Amino acid sequence: MTPVSLVLFLTFTLLPFTAGYIAPGLSKGTIREQKVWVREGSSAVLPCHLSPRKTRGSSKQLPDKISVLWRRHGGSVHQEPHVVLEVGDSGLQKTALCMKPRVSLQDSAWRNGNFSLRIAPVRSEDVGLYEAQVTYKTEVHSCHVELGVITVTLNPPSPVIGNELLLMSCNSSHRASLVEACWFHNEHLGPTSRTICSFSRTLSIFYPAMSHAGSWRCQLRYSDKEIISATFNLQILGFEGPANPVVYAAAGSAADLPCSLSYLPSAFGMRVVAAHWSHLAGGHLQKWDISQNVSSRSFPLHLPVVGPGDAGQYRCAVSVGHGTISRNVTLAVVTVTPSIQGPVSEGNRLLLICSLTHSQGHERFQWTHLDSAPTKSKLAVASSHHLEGHSSWMRPTLEIPQVSQKDTGTWECSVHGPEGRLGAVEYDLQITGAQVSSAPSILSGQVTFGLTLTLFFLLAICVVALALQKRAQTPAFPALEGMFAVTVPGKSVEENQKGKIQQTEC
Image (cartoon, rainbow, N blue to C red; front, side, top):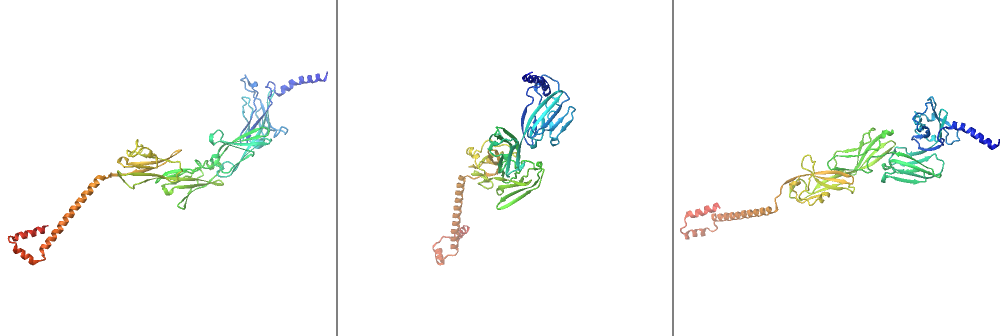
C-alpha cells in the first residue's frame, strides 16, 4: 500500500469516530468564539445555545440527564483552565469559590436549549476566555466566549457632590493601543446632549452641576479598529430646580424660599449635619438654622410677612457627607403704590404703580380688576369705561383719568415670565362721594363775595349812625344850639325827641 493510500484509509476510517464524539447531528460550526464586552459592576451573559437544527420541528424537551461544564482559561487560551460552574447529570452543582454566588445558568431548566452563563456583578478579574461543554447521551456541544471588561471610575465616587472637581476615567482589558476616547452625555436628547472627544481616557469636570447628571457613554477606539463602549448613570448630589431660583411674593404676604436636595442623603449612607440660611439686609447679616432631619431632603425658609426691605439674595448652605453645598435664592417683592394715599374722591385722576424689586429683565405686568364679590373668582369682562384702550393693562403703571364708582374694588397686578405666572399683588381701591364740580365752585364764590359786601355796608351805616348820635348828645357849640332853637319856631319838643329816638334805634 502506497503512503498516499494509507493516509486516505486512515482518514476515512477515523472520521466517523471523531464526528460522533464532537457533535454528531449538530450544525456545522458549533464550536465558535464570541466576544462580550461588559462594564464592571453590571451583569454579563455569556451565550451558549443548542443549534436550531437540533430542536427544529420537535416539541420534545431535552433529556433530563444533561451535564454542563463552564471553564475559564484566564486572560489567554494558553493558561490552565479552571472550573467556573459545573452541573452534573444528577443535578449536583459546583461553583468556584471566587465566583460564588455571582454565577448561574441563564435557564436552569434547560427547556429551550439555553445554557448561557450569567455573571452578576462582573469584576475586573473575570476577564478571560470561557468554554462551555454540554454533554447529553453521546453528544457534546461546545461554546467559546471571550469576556472583556470596561472599567469606569469616578473620583470622587458617586454620588458626586456639586461644585467639587470630578474626574471620570474609562479603561478596558483590550491590549491594543488607544487611538481616541469619546464621551457622550444624554445622547439623542436634543440641546442637552454633548460630545467630548480626546486622546485621554480621563474627562475632567471642574464645577459639576445638576446639568451634568444623567446618562453618560464612554467609547474607546483602538489601533486594531476595535471600538468598545460602556454606559453609566452619573448621580450628582445638588439642588433641585434652576441654578438661581427667584421667588416672587406680594408685599405683606408670606414667602417660602426653596432648598431641596436632588437625592435623599441617607439613601447613600450620608447624614445631613445641618442647613443654614443667611441674608445680608441693610449691612446686617441675618442667620437662620434649620433643624437636622436625616429623613428629608427639603429645607425651606418660611418668612411670615415680607416687605421691600426683605428683598434680595438669600443663601442656603447644607452640610452633607464630607462637604457643604450651597445655593442662592432671590426674593423679589411686588408692591403697588397709588398716586393718592387713602380713599380717592370720585372724578380724580389716579395712578397705580406696580413695582418689582430685583427684576430679572424678562418680566411683564398685567392689571386685572377682580370682581367685587367676596369669592373674587371672576375677572372683569371688560376694562373700565375710563381706561384708554387695553394697552394700559399690560404696563407697570395703570392710569385711571377719572375715577368712578365702577372702579371700586380689588385691583390685581400680576407678574409674568417665559415660564408663566410668577406672582401677584392686590390693591383695594376705595372711592368717596362725588366731588363738587368747577362751575358750582365759581357761583359759590360770587355769593360769598356779595354777602361779605352787604355786611360791610351795613357795618358802615351803623358806624355813621353812632357818630351822629354821639354828636347830637354832646354838641361842640352850645351857643349855636340856643340860637338855632330861637330862630326855628314851630319845632316842637316831640319832634326833637322823635329824632333822638330814631338815631338811638339806628
